[in-house]
Amino acid sequence: MTRCPFPNCPNDLPKGGVICVDHYFALEPARARFLNAAKVRLDRETDPKLRAHLAEQLEGYINAAIHSISTEEAESWRQRRWPARKQGETSVS
Ligand SMILES: [Zn+2]
Image (cartoon, rainbow, N blue to C red; front, top):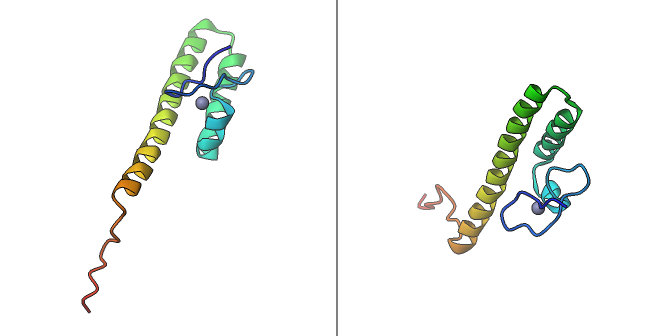
């Protein structure tokens, strides 16, 4: 079994999957579908040169997906730590 590529994720990958189910649904739907499409393209490619290229691309997409989630998590953590002051609310009218 292959482990999900997300840092500290304990889940195994589903058969033929790129990321675990939890993370699939944690991602924006468009990004999650895009990752799976890239994986399918890689699986169907038979030319070794093209496969290497597609594998490299897929790795980049996965890294971007990991980054997008950790950014969101960091952001929500920041907002819990320092509750957002609403911008432009200097109600001295
Ligand atoms: Zn995962």
